[in-house]
Length: 248
Image (tube, rainbow, N blue to C red; front, side, top):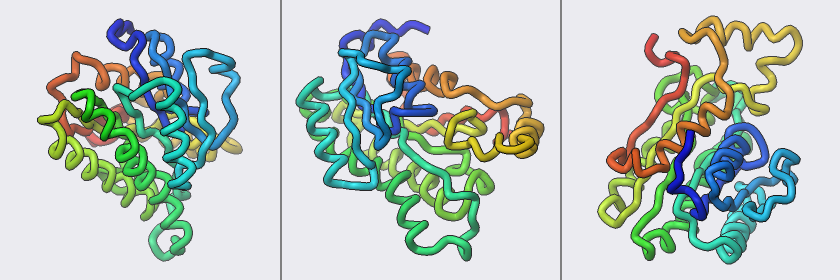
């Protein structure tokens, strides 16, 4: 899949060290883009010492550190044309009575508030250039119950609402915002499903109409399309990539 328009563009990606974020980083680099990559983990070997990558190590739950990292990345590579709010974590599928306040706040800070912080740190510069694309990471848990616990499901539903409002407020000023809603994606975040005898992963595949888990590169390919001019009339949408899970 080739999108020559991304050559020399700047893309900001959170959660860039693993899973979908890493796949997105590699996909945009392959298109000739520059990437401001933000993650609390170390620079992954799959990226290595790449001059097109500005690696910023920051915890997305830390507002000051995250904002500082974004500012440093923009100083190095310029205003991003594309922002991928990808960082996130699961909540162990815990119901509300098993979710204490600290756990609730941790999930919302990681999955939801980080997107607000990244958006507000990058949006003014995007508005100044009259162009910007946000690809926010939701989940099938943002559309139905059962894809996570109480905190994760609440956060992912909120991301969809936030994305729609973001697009509505700024679409006329050159901004586009859309969501991706992944289902079963084989990433480190879902490693627990593959642990031991892998029965949980097998059950998920059996319950998915496509009868398999997806690879993070498949989500990265969808990201390229949503960020491209080919999706210029897609505004405030939620695009599931779930092997048919939601059709059941």
